Amino acid sequence: MSEITNLDATSATATGNPKPAQSWLPGSVVSVAYRKIAFRLIPLLFLCYLAAYLDRVNISFVKAQMQVDIGLSTAAYGIGAGIFFIGYFIFEVPSNLLMARIGARKTLLRIMVLWGITSSLMMFVHEEWSFYLLRFLLGAFEAGFTPGIIFFLSKWTPGRLRARYLSLFITATAVAGLVGAPFTGWTLTALNGVAGLAGWQWTFLLQGIPPVVLGIVVFFVLPDTPREARWLSTEQLAAVETALAEDPEAAGGQHVRFARALHDWRTYALSVAYFCISGGIFLVTFWLPTALGQYKVEPQLLGWLTAIPYLGAVVAMVIMGRLSDRFNERRWFIVIPLLIGAAALVATIYNTSSLTATIVCFTIGAAGIWSAFAVFWSVPPLFYTGVAAAGAIAVINSIGNLNGFVNPFIVGGIQTATGSLSGGLLLTVGGLLLGAIIVIFTVRRPDRRHSDVVKGAGIAAD
Image (tube, rainbow, N blue to C red):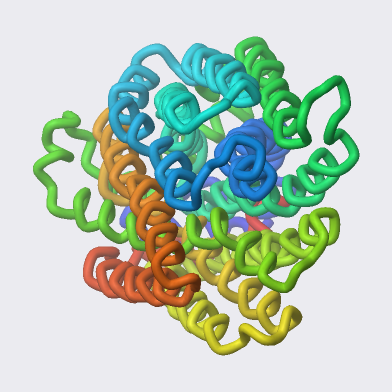
């Protein structure tokens, strides 16, 4: 008891609050509440994001077979892969602002059902223009999903837990490669020709079904706010609301109208930084199978080998998210992994004769870039809350994701002209370095007032 009293007194003195802050020690009400929140929310949201990312990147896995069947050029593939993000950009902010009004349940139902149906319709692509149209619609329907979830989690979690919660959610982007590559390798070979459909058609059909099912599940299961969570006791709900009210990071944000966020230079600085970080993610996502495919690996084995860098990314994201919260540090947990990722991508250029070395370099690169990506999304809530946070997150995500159009288009063009990925890799590395510089000068050093109690949040914080 004396330990709890002393810990609370220390926190109260640090925050200048005469009323002692609640204890975050293991077994405390708030730590039990957030343990329950972690188990109730994160697995479902993880599955949703996994389905989203599989539908976004499955095109990279079916690229070779699809190109042969419908006569799609590398340049056309690059345009189609990227045009997804044009639709995404146009509808991103409106979707997130609407979510701030109607809640996550209704928003995710609309988004997931529409994108799931559209993804399955990709099986009917037969020439370039149908390919472009469906990719654009897929982006338009998915718009608002990622920033919506990030905003949703910011309403549930205090800053001391935010990076690890976001990293657990965002690991789905890496797991999509870990799971999607072997699965797609299987569908491309085992199902090719079944019922008169090519393997790439089966891939689109099967991967479009889970989002529809999950969207319906979310509508009936996901609570929009802690007050709607019937599985939280009255005491646990009060502890969660107190934790959010006492959050020093949320207190630093400005609860203002969305228009104010549009006039803040930090919104655009973070947008450019995210644009640069996204370049690394999209390069690995869209071009890793191509880079490994130069070693003449059969499709089934290529699927398993492609999964290795994603496995490294998953491990790194979980570790870096927890460390970022433990040390209450955001800036350097973004910058240092970006520098490591950039160095690893450069190394791939000089390892073209060794499949093993190429996989190792891509694994280190993916681990660095993805871990920086996960911690990055704990930054915007430092600046804004409420509707301004919803809008700012959507702006940052929509501008950043435009790299999903630029990167495949430019890298595809460079590869077509030179027959090599080296030029695209160097361009992406330059972007990662620029992103690191922007983060250094934009992201403030977080307030360390709660660092003495962060270790007591049980599974949610350990």
